[in-house]
Image (cartoon, rainbow, N blue to C red):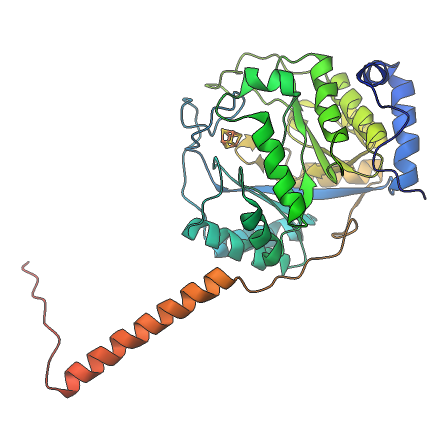
Length: 370
Ligand code: SF4
């Protein structure tokens, strides 16, 4: 099997648009043929997406119910505990998921206690033998290195659409800033997960523009999620009509043909697709779905429905680390230094207290008036 990260047959925007608009069955046939060369067509990875910190985001992504500025039903929550993430990861694993994506509604990663908690979550879930992906907003190269060192397998940062259309959907950060974060993930040795959303009012040219952005990269993303917009009440895109299922199939097939080795992930919007349309997506090269009843905050088919679909279609849940070795989780220097400093401080306080007692001082009694 030859190495083919980007298909050399298609290099111009015109060629890609022509490909996207090909007679549907021709397009799916071409995609299915390529898919069989680089992937086991019966294997589909079940991934779970967990919101580890929900809502209250300062950004203005027009599709997102977690943006603080929109009035939606999403309730903001602070970061989950490591134990709770491990419990949910165990449940996802028991239901067949081999990848856990942890999402935090942040503009960017900050070097604070919450990020330390994420590092501990990554270590714990990687040690359970699952691929760990995180989507935490913009991040520096140093932060990416800490995540890599903790055992993170992939970093997700979607470009969403073409550079030209991006400004219609998000104004609080630039397309180039997103490219920079992807570059930082690369420099740290993480694999990249980056994809888009269709059905936001963009033209076919914008869908192709998204793929062109990935073609311009030295290494395209190993993982490309394709989402259909889930129009949520209270967001600027609440009135968008659901995208035709055929458009999802076309986008999956085109992405598969252009990036033969990447995993194309059939992501948000599956609740609006029937099993037949999903089957066409698998035929066209989708190699992963998100399983579990929630995709961050939006609805998703239940584990049981997907198990039934796998049985009917003869699909097999894909094992983890087929696309790369399991990373090693190393101790995190900052967390170790903090814990050592905390232990030392505790010891000093206990010593001071012991000395005070031996000198005849009694701790002050606090009397609470009832
Ligand atoms: S998509 Fe992410 S960055 Fe944009 S508003 Fe939602 S949580 Fe914030």
